[in-house]
Image (cartoon, rainbow, N blue to C red; front, side, top):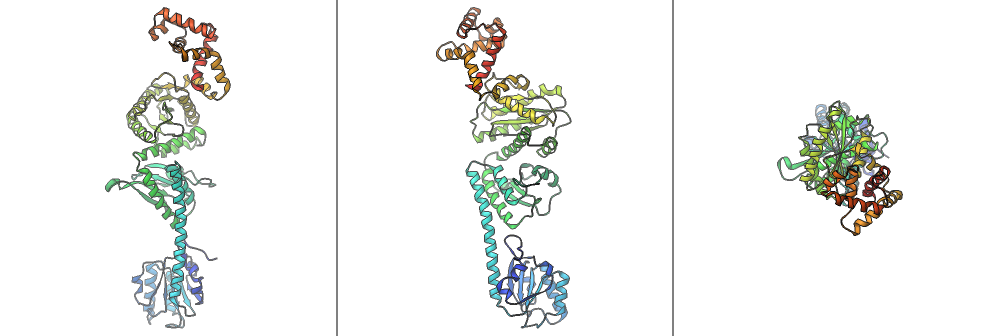
Length: 533
């Protein structure tokens, strides 16, 4: 089978192999190595200055009447066609020439223009119809492929997916990394073709090639609202690092851009999308899917450029998992604005499936941790309050370097989940939550629930049926290490009332509250109750 040109076209070689031209016994006289040129259209004509009527890419059919009789006229005729960029010149012998003049052949060779002579007469209208039908069929097949990608992307969006999922589908279709960026060039999201062996990480591709540019890159504007600066909301870019791009990819890109435009019309979607991309990076770092050696370069692409000091992982977790999607967009925007005044480099992401916001903060040294954690936590809480989301849990991890920051992020995320239900505070130190994290990890095991029921079950049953509740009294008493005066002050009770309550607790549990081992068991049971209830 003859080679095809770019999708949506046919080549000169393919045209010569079609029945209508094959009947003319075509003979290639010049540029036989360039028969892979794409044929955009077919034109038949005899005018001496026909080159001025052409746009380029045509296969020109002629009997040679317009070639002229003098060698200079013939050379000028062929030169004009070559400079216009036609695909090939096909001359039918008999009406004007028994054989093509040397001036025609030599000029075609010098300009690299495919020149074909037909030894038999053929109806040019049949040739035109046949090639045009082939072009239409090719274009229709191209449109069907683009339509299939559009259908798959639409199904993803209707199924609850978003921009990242659409980009991954489009990247798989092109076989190349694709990028979504703001009009000023800030990267919002990067996606690569899934399962492609040896494919480069899209973030590394972006950092290495975005400034230098790449020949053949495909960029499509995603329309915004209204004229002026808002006319372009974002740009979709494909870099052909794995495979060349074809016209079908342009059509698919235009259709994908239309879908993305609809999605991006949601308020503040760009910032939420960027935060999700950063969240994916931080999650990959925590899960071990990002090599610590590659992490600094990828973080720089995402705009995070800390100094040589340690990194402070932090996590914000909302008190409820039921957060409307538009609240996440508002939250990200508000938090970003609050963090601008922190005075330290911050990389903030969003992980909607887990309902949390992970961060990395650049420190100058370990001693700076309490001060910076205070400022970052205050900014996070202020942003959450502005978005109408109250009582978030903020956890600060231990300062570390890139080689261990993934594990530190994972620990902080677990601690943020385990800390929900603890008394509210500006931020929790991950090193004080180790017991809570351990109990949270054991939450699905029946032994933990049995332990809680065995140690404080009677007290839980009492509080369900009677007043005053005694669990808060026990929690405050243990928090003050059994110091009754401090416990009474915090609970606003006189001492006798406190003594009576403690005595009732001891009777219900059948234990001595002043015994150290008993106090340890009670503490563990009270903390574990949040994870099994």
